Length: 219
Image: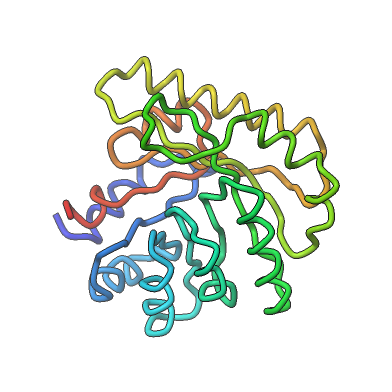
């Protein structure tokens, strides 16, 4: 199946309220352009430098999402153009994003990455840490970022009930954080679900899925 066919097939099953991020890391620009020509406009990368290079050469109506681990010293390279940063798991990172957004006269949307998996290899903050950050004075002083939701990655396992439980946990955290009515916040996005588990994620309340191999084929 071609990239175009894969995309059309996935989109025909996606509920209207669920946004699709095409995870294009390590893929050549020609593959991304095939997806672009098929109507895809949101692309997710996990390395800032690679994303910046692709942004340079590709059409400017693309919305670029940073879906990988964010290193503070690299934020400046994506601050001029990034549409959404998914994996914010420390206040220090929010502070740096705010600083670079200010330099570029922009407000940058961010998602707080919540640790929902049992695995130690997954990044993320605890629900309590997220709550503490959103209610802190230091956070309310950041004028050039907006937290628009949460992101999480389930445990890599075939146990569907465990994955379901983890996704439901993230949805619950989202609802609880929403009740805080925090400054610089407009919580709308629950980013969860990848190629292997996105249908489960949608059933648990995901509003944004991140799909790579099911669009572009195996890496």
